[in-house]
Length: 301
Image (cartoon, rainbow, N blue to C red; front, side, top):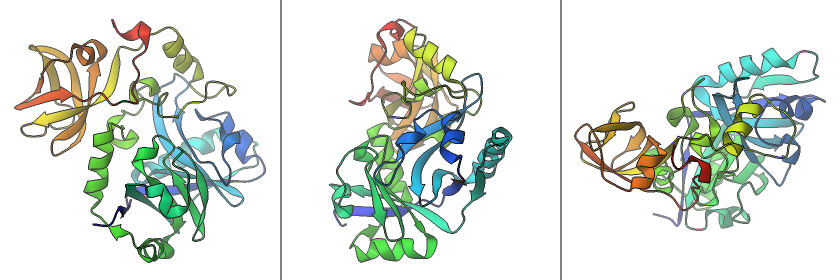
């Protein structure tokens, strides 16, 4: 296998927000600072309910006179519908872009293949679209949004090897990064449970946005009691929703997994206990990643 591999992310799609008010419109809605998105910078952000619960997450990139949102394909129409509800008199068009496709490049020094610094969110134009280091964690690699007919040929021309998407998913799980479309629960999860603070998905200095009050209160009052955390699995991978126990006591549930790695939603006291866990016939072990912080006020929660 080449030093870097690529996968076509068929489960992702692009929504374009254009018009004179596109930045101001999105700025009042999403968790990150849209004003920082530009030719050299991409961001990760989320759209929340007014009560601060998760609805959608996406990567934001500048695509000419529009801001492109790389989001989950199966829920793209719902994201568009929700944004349209808030458009009111803003001069902004919100359109699906089936002509664009999304890929990920991963492996040692993946940013080098595109002349990018290994900094989260570093971006540049490439092959009629955009290449950007994953804004969450540079170790995840590079994401690309390109015209669909160009995407695969452009990456093969660089000498990259096409890989099974399962390998990229395992790469994500080994790094302990949650997938919003599979690990968060719509209208229930909150961002700090999913590492959006450490993984650069929230700007604490920007102005108001939907759900900001609960998000800020949870952080500054130390109210967090559970986290999504990676686990090593010994035995059959538990299904999504399987109950996780510690010494027979329920402490959480399973989310996404692949082979011997997964993500579990656990009480913070169970994470800190560093003791064997169980889910069905499988034994679990917390693999707390180096990027994860546990808020001082939450550790007894």
